[in-house]
Structure formats: C-alpha cells, structure tokens
Amino acid sequence: MPLRWAWLAAILLAPLLRKLVRPRQGGRPPVDVQAVRSRVASARESAGIATLFVIVLVLACACAALLAAGVTALVLSPQWLGAVLVGVAAAVALAGVPETLRLRRAVHARRLRLHGREVSRELDGTRPV
Image 1 (cartoon, helix red, strand yellow):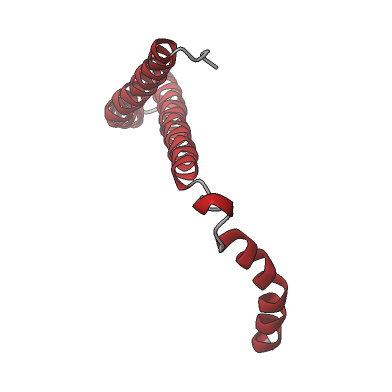
Image 2 (cartoon, one colour):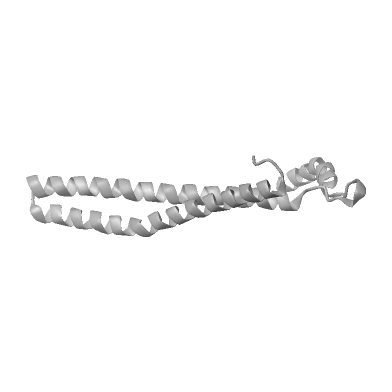
C-alpha cells in the first residue's frame, strides 16, 4: 500500500518541486534563502520565549497551589504535612528563579535586537516598520 501512495505523491509533487527548484530569469534563486532563515529564526525565538513563559507560569501555579495547601495544613491539620508542603513550594519557587531569569534575558535581547534593527533602518534612510 505505501508504494502506491508514493508514486501518486511523486506525480503530484514533482511539477511543484521543479518549479520551486529551477532557477529564474537573471540567475536569481527561486527562493530567498536569507529571508526564509530570518523568518525561521524569528519564529524560533518567539516559540522559545513562549515556552519559557509557559514553564514559568506552570511553576508559579504549582508553587501557589502547594503554598496554599501547606498553609492550610499548618493551620488546620498535622503541622508536619503543612511544613512539608511549604518546603516543597519553596523548592518549586527556587526552581523557577533560573527560568524567570532566562525569560527576562530572552525578552530583553529580543527588544534590543528589534530596536537595533529599527535604528539601522532609520540610518539607512528606509522607514521603520
């Protein structure tokens, strides 16, 4: 079965691939590789920042839940359980510190890079986007 789909895909995709791969008039490449790399890098950077944000958010929610349960257990039920939960909440909070710092650095680096790009466009005489 997979062989039948392979030749069908080859027949349908071959003209599209030939059109994308062949050189255009004037020797220009059909695809602007630098623009593609730039877009991929931008998307990768945004995805990295979003991933760091989600990690920090999950750690903060876990820390808040453990802290609430620990304080409640300290007041109402066995104090050893509350102390353990508060200790685990403190450990989770400490685990979140490096992630928070990475997130701040990534956002700061992105802002600096975008600001530098705007300044260079102004100096080149083109309008910033």
